[in-house]
View 1 (tube, rainbow, N blue to C red):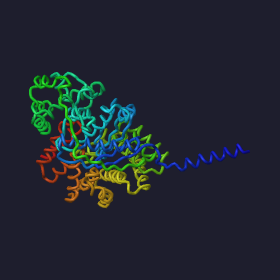
View 2: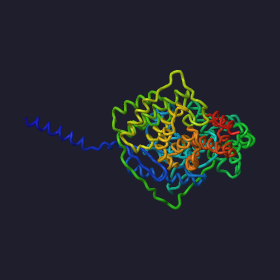
View 3: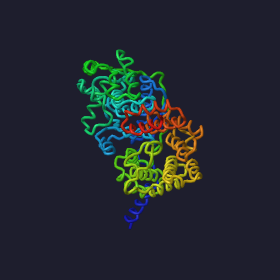
View 4: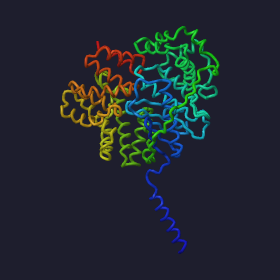
Length: 505
């Protein structure tokens, strides 16, 4: 009897303890600083130290590559010490993925606090450089330049004097490869990622050996600037490469031992302590990590949507889960309509008319899920934007049958978000576009919001395209053509840029 009573008391005690553990006790933390957001399963102390390093390295990037603008959104990093999980998310053997999505700049990167210091933050630094190159400058850059400079800055580490050392021999990112005229020419013409992991790794190494000296060594002063000007003014990648000089001579100059390459030592002065807010992540947030990135990358849409649907069963009261499920379902709708991911969500000059497939995928499930998210959390900003986007797409399909008050309902959802175009650039672009789809001239406020959305998120192709077409409609043909021409070497936007240029004549 005593044993039975003790057993029951122990059981009750265990139940009480389990109930006392908050729903957010997961081991994962979310940290937010002035310019970045990081999610990681680290101790608070380690995470705060990492955020300090990230903010300091941000200053290094701006010091060595002074930007023309400051990006409006904070890139969100999800860190993992398991590289296989990252490879699973992107279906490619890589230790980091950096996606400057129209919805959110998002990264999944390898980080192990117990790894050797010279490689610990490499993948974080790689993606930080990618975002800086994309959003701190108005001219797009070719793939080899973005990849090569990111690979170079990923070699950074802190020495015993607390200085950042970049490009020092011995880094795993400083692998020596031959820069032959053929290797040089091949790297300069790459526009899409290689299918082979080995080829892609070699491309990054060659690109690093080309890009770092062109950026940092005095003998090449002005060369890179002339090359980028050629690249963004409509010349082919092969023709733009002529600005780099004779390929045989350049290859011979760059094909040298790693020990003779550019190395930089940077001291952060004055020292600044980063302001960092840290909170535990909830279980639904942790459960969404990989699926959220899969959904945004559109790696495997149908399986991702199915997994998110199952997750709504586990977390029926989670607005973020319902939103991600709705977004995955709506991505399936768009792929069905356009035969793949559409440029600028399928609006503007991108298509002319909907390309409806034989068996169009219904938006009913996306609609149900986004409304469920808003029923749980009416202030969920991304769900508000997605609901408005679905509504706008339906009105475009309805054509002349759409009523003015229906467009007003779309704008009622978007207007509060569009007032913060740096933070919600996609909402600002859709708000402006709603007037175009209705056949009305957008007000000046809507245009200025779209303009600010682009100026603070210059690396997002959808926003560049939306702003260019808006300029064209306003009669600013010169600026519009310049922006559209700058996209002609981008295989994603090349076709729509040509069509928009034809309409801009």
